[in-house]
Image (cartoon, rainbow, N blue to C red; front, side, top):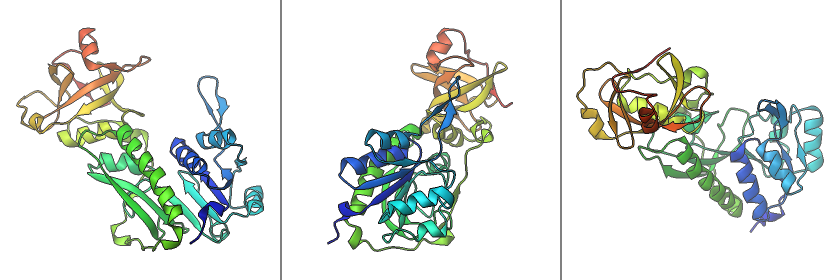
Length: 319
């Protein structure tokens, strides 16, 4: 049986999700010899360069970290060859690996992806799964090829998406599953059987645009609910209330709300409950629990009602 803890692992990733997976590997005594991450980006009002979360973990454990413009050529590829990895593992790296990189490690290049491939290949699989009303998602580890997220599957694990799970909840479920799955993948590496993806079932999770973040209450209630929760707690969907752009969070769906009889136009605040407001949609109503006004912190909609920032019979509208 192969001792995968002797593998020289190069890890590639950028955001928090990748950072957590990297730390799980290090804490379980896998031999991470180097880390690649995207370049630091300016953040905040001062626009100071901030290290990526993956870089922070690498520095914490004194693992060499590299942030070249490209890992496929030039000094990036030279760094990689010097590390002489047995295996490369990527998680939310954000860059495409070319054939010369994919062929370099004898044990292959593998990606930890947050969807049930071949569904939701691409940049935003968690948000798109929620937005489309999926009742399950998962983690897939596959052998990388040049085509986007299209390689043979080594291991796949599922979780449920409950009707009122938002992005934050699903993210945490998937993060826990990703850490468990990557350990299982390495611990059973020599026993894995690869399974080709069915191209006929492939779908794509396109990168999120500003237009994706606009909620339209003229849609069916469940579609409005899915839109809001797919971007909650970050970055939040937008609507216009009393000529101000606001962000909306804390959507709650119940089948009872589909029977809401009200002739008000969609987007109208039609009632107040103890924990949120009811907003009319095309075929019912959705409960909304939190709102953020321009330049303000997020507050509950009940506090907004009590502070007369929201009122029954007023409405949210498109731009």
